[in-house]
Image 1 (cartoon, one colour):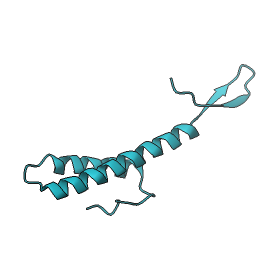
Image 2 (tube, helix red, strand yellow):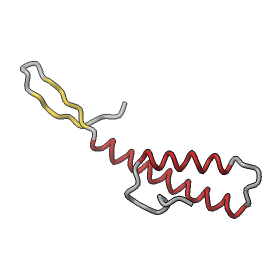
Image 3 (cartoon, one colour):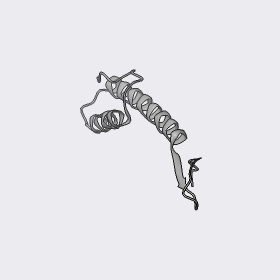
Length: 80
């Protein structure tokens, strides 16, 4: 198992790397059912946490707009 399992301070890149490792392991034929289930559950946890990180980041992204007179204003990011 990974030391990242269950930690809230894990970054997106580390979660994605762990997900890749989980997928590789799940694709192996000699995997026992119990281990596959544990890996699947861990993977779901990483997917949910990564989704949360992306949501938080999206909310924090702001777009700088330079107006005609040179003043800079900040607008919230709007998904397209």
